[in-house]
Image (cartoon, rainbow, N blue to C red; front, side, top):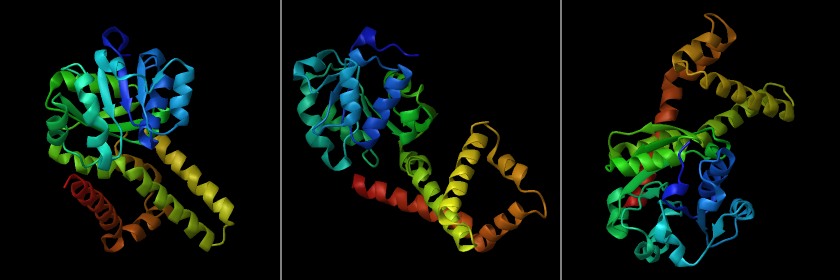
Length: 268
């Protein structure tokens, strides 16, 4: 576990859905001690209030940032300049800016912050310390600082180039919603075949948990499929139907491509 107390507080700028998930993961794992947390949020957030009760500082005076070890930028992409700009002068010159925003390039952030930038794209399961996070930075020290913030709450995947961060966003950051949508579709299909809707939903959710347990073994995805899909069996028949006409790969490509295009549109 990385100790951040020896070199100053960690600043969390923004406590919306993703910021709150990161905060919950830090508190659950002890990645950052509450007394070493500064939370800057324009609105009241339950996660921030829970952290305050444990000793975190919420919206303290600006001089509290003078010893910051890192600033995690977790605001909406449309408002990051307005949120970050006024804080820059109060940060140490070597404080890395750890952005968890989709679609905003490191060069744009660095132009405002004039400090090292790390981009991280985590899933909201970091709240339960079961997330995955893509990570990129051209600054080795900043990269390691960000790794220390996320390696207890996510499987951190290093990217070789920033140019693929938008793809990582589509494959991981957005994909849990794609998977939930497919599970919803499975539940509807089960109901259409005669299951009660509540039973179909419970069975589909249970299947999702079972799939997650298999994924956590680290086995190759192809092996996980073949363990269940016996030749000539019911699972193989279902997979063959999904794969007919390239429907499965086509749907996945369409979802990821749309997410990538949206991220690029956000970045301008």
